[in-house]
Amino acid sequence: MEDNYPIIVCDNLRKSYGSLEVLKGVTGRLSKGDVVSVIGPSGCGKSTFLRCLNRLETINGGRLEVLGVDISSPTLNQKVLRQLRSKVSMVFQHFNLFPHLTVLENLMLAPQKVLKSPQSQCREQALFYLEKVGLAEKAHFYPEQLSGGQKQRVAIARSLCMKPEVILFDEPTSALDPELVGEVLTVMRNLAQEGMTMVVVTHEMQFAREVSNLVLFFNQGIIEEQGDPQQVFTNPQSDRLKAFLSRINPN
Image (tube, one colour):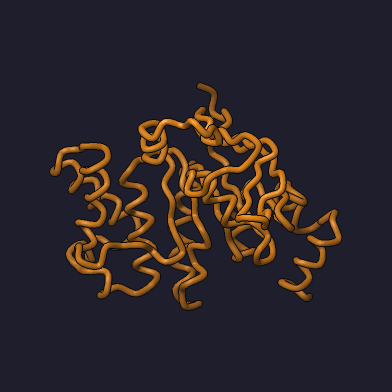
């Protein structure tokens, strides 16, 4: 299969909560190896869009295809969805580590339960990815013994243990103290350089500018503007994007 085959294709994607329509017709196409930053003001639909990509939200209209599976279909088979989720990992804002398990046990759990991988293989793999995120020495610690930045790096390592084809990041640094943000972004930069397909909802504009190859600007439930970072950040077309960027970067 060619390197840039589409991993995510959405056509007029819609999502409502009761009478409130949050996604109002999102259309786009993301390819293998893309690093996509999703930016925009609070309440514009960014996180809802991300959650739809993993079918954590029901979809009210349009079509959404992920890794060749139509996950917008009302008759989507649950077994197919579980298989898909094993290939589409998600890193949340608040880590979601099991407090009663050690770091190593947190990493080994999903490959053992979902992928049915042997325990010895899961352990070896978990230690490998802990080393990758710079936390090998924390394998036998519990989450409460870690800083926020360390917890998030563990959460990223846990995602990698599933050998995903794409990782979704939902504001992965927004719950961190400012001095801890850099260590998480460094791990994400390294993943991008290695070719991991990533969709990142973020307020870190420098990361979006330097690491992404595609930026999506959401506004009021639609993608109002999209393009490569150079285009989006230095030559914005819409008045709403210009205003958004001026508030973040008043100079």
